[in-house]
Image 1 (cartoon, rainbow, N blue to C red):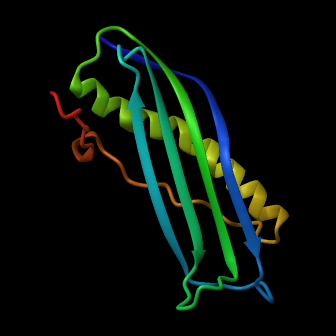
Image 2: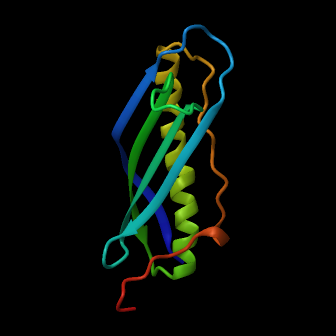
Image 3: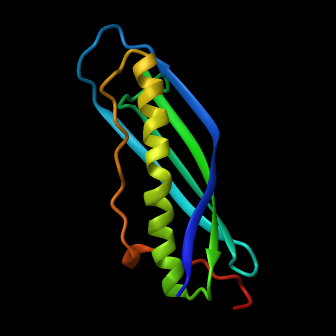
Length: 136
């Protein structure tokens, strides 16, 4: 049975601005992507989490915007099956998301939005699609 262990994470990109005139409720939209890539012998993988939250506006000028990209490095022990990879995809997200949430919360609090929380995405192993190289 294969096991997954997080070794480290790194904040690769963080962008934030708050140009709201006054505190209050605003309509927000959320963009999200998450991927996991394995090394050739499946002993390590790197997960990338990108999340962006911005105010809903028709124009290009937003009043509120935060985006962040985190990369997590994970070590894998044991023989890895495709079913393991589906489980690891979800586990990588579950382990990486709290770091993204903390960074976003602290950044937004310093920028005048102390109650901001990132939306945790619903993810299940059944929704994970594995990418295959062309020769497999």
